Length: 348
Image (cartoon, rainbow, N blue to C red):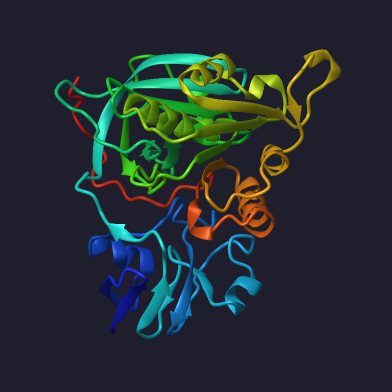
């Protein structure tokens, strides 16, 4: 059965089949909604169903609570229609003309940024270039494994190599491969660009970036892009970690201050032997301590779902941040992906 979905306040509308999620149907018909994991885990795509009924689908309880459901909220990446729908999404828009592609790449360089963080530089075949927006991510397609999402850390204007920051995860098959088996010149495949985590360049609001650990990667891309195009908006980066090693590009981030982007590093578990002279505690709490009113700001946050949930809740409830001014990207499992081919000839 086919239903109709209308998005408010934009007025965009599109048909949706009963087996499709709201996000799938929107993307298919040329409209984009905020999303990240597409697994019901991160909560980025949460929105309100103003009229109609949905099947909420499979999701984590922390991403969509019973209280959320009672308030008419759902996750657009999981929800399927049971009737015509009227949904609310402030940041819905037309999809850009940047195509999502599956491409091979070669590992050009591997750099240990910390004991548990590896920077990869990936080289595309001769004549190929990936078009993307600062803040987006790609899905690595390891053979016989689920895809793994990683944010692009390089800015679009610096696209000779694609840069990923990969944290070693205990029991993670792909990250174990990266740290224990991968070598330079290995051939990989990826799908991208993906996601709607991007800087709204048409706004004039001051920007605050909040990063947790390797959530620094897409923020780095956005800041470098903003500085490159000469964006004339106040910018402030808060980057949090547990110990100094978690702030694995501290000196690079400090250098942005000379270009107009303020920087506040924050550690939550600094030890006496670290000789840490900076801010301590939770990174989003440092922001709460510094700002009494966020009503005129935009927040771009990337990190764990727990950090993002706390940040969104406290910024909107305690500092008057409009919900539509909070943009986020969560670390969460990548969706299942069936490869269109098993073997390919290397173009290198």
